[in-house]
Amino acid sequence: MVDSPAGAAHEPQSPPLPPGGTVRPITRWGTEVMHRPQRQVTSYDEDLRALAADMVATMYAADGVGLAACQIGADVAMFVFDCADEGGTRFQGVVCNPTLVLPEAGRRRLDEDDEGCLSLPGAFVECARPDWARVEGFGLDGEPVTFEGDGLLARCLQHETDHTLGTVFGDRIPTKQRKKLQKAHDKTAGDYPATWPVP
Ligand SMILES: [Zn+2]
Image 1 (tube, rainbow, N blue to C red):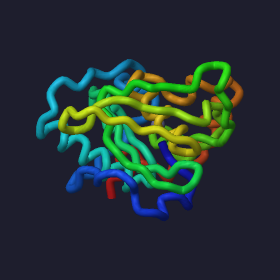
Image 2: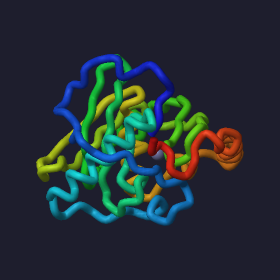
Image 3: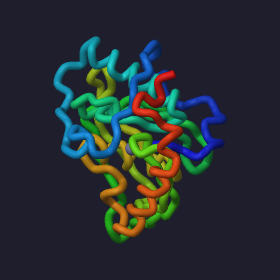
């Protein structure tokens, strides 16, 4: 997921993300792996850590706040994020095999902020989502991890978990909004060559 500027001003609250990755081109909407659930992680090995490091490098190069493995073409249910909540507290992490927990229907409040996706760069449109979310999954060593929060963090956790299930946020908005989104992307397409964000 991509954020509008600001954010990320504070030191993160969680352990550091894996360093040393290589920036890779970002896969776009329409690529097969992005539109079906990806394979669950079963071995927590060096290859997985290397993939996560590449995802982190790519997310930062693209000024994103979250990135799923399918967004660099990998068929792996995993995402990384570095994102602030409503109060400005910054969280970062790696989540394998994520499952989402949302407030029950009666307690759900919708947040109607703009949303964007690194796999459709240069475009934002309103997307209503619950204003709080929790994600449960596993870290790079197979240890259970949980992240939860509100604000942009809630949106990010939902957006990235969606990716691992083959859903893009364009699937969650009305057709008219989706057309508006595509138009905005088409307008700026020249700024994002196929290899973006590789320098
Ligand atoms: Zn996305």
